[in-house]
Image (tube, rainbow, N blue to C red; front, side, top):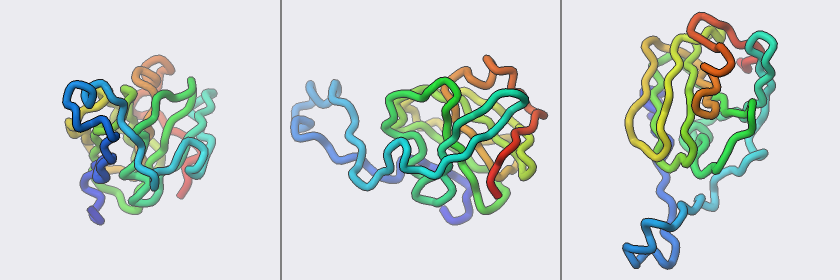
Length: 161
C-alpha cells in the first residue's frame, strides 16, 4: 500500500480470546487489541482549529499508525479525533473494521480545505473514499462535523506538514 491509494486500517488481525473456540461466546466477546498497537496518548498530538473550535487530534503519520487508526477504541472525547497525514496527495480510502465507535471523516486537500465529509458505521468494511485527492483526513465522533458546522470549503488550521 505504499501508493496510499487505500488505507485499510485492519491489515492486522486481532488474536482470538481463549474462549473464542465456542461460537456462542465468541460472538459476544469484545475484540482484543493486539499487543503492538498504540493506546490513546501514545500517538503524537496536535491541536487543530476550525474557526473558533479547538480539536485535540492524535496524529497517524506513519503507515503502521494509519493502518491502526482508531481501531479498538471504545470512545472519543467531545472534541477529540485522529488526524491522518499522508506523504502524497491521493485518493485515500478508509474502512471501519475493528473500529468499535461510529465516526465521521473529513477529507482535506494539501492546504487543509475540507473536500468531503462522510459518516462511517462501526465495524464495517465498506470503503469510504473522497471525491478528490488530498493529504489529510480527520476522524471524529459520528455527527461531529455536522454538529459543529464544518462543511466542504472550510479550512482547518494547525495541520502538520
